[in-house]
Image (tube, rainbow, N blue to C red; front, side, top):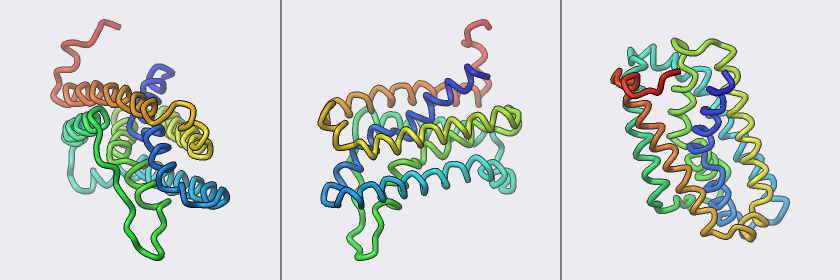
Length: 204
């Protein structure tokens, strides 16, 4: 179980990408006061947490109601996560918030899609498959998700200091390393969905 939770932590970290979120947060909140930056950080993590934990609880139920098999979702999820990993590795344009008077950047783009990314939503559903993992393991994965969101909050609160320390280049390097890990995991998902993952798995 500990090995599984450790793997989950790496995957969820890669898909949430706290480093990339921190860099985006720093850019978008540069004009805010310190108090408003803190408030935005808390709201960002709260909204993202609601989305991800909600996906863990009802995501698979929705798939079942629509008649979508987990293997099909796992295969499509593997493809999407692979593309997402490539996006992290090669970089992409940063989304910008809409210019609306009442627009809350904590919702978009900070909570969605920067923190609760499409890849993260897919990952938490796949990692808590009801047909594979017992409830205690699923609870463990949910706690891992909460812990990583907690780390994300700390990074957001410390974003200015951290960016000054590692620089934008350092954050970019870390993001790309996690993208490589995510791409490798996505290949595993696809192979397992096709039933070929066991052919190359190392002996236990």
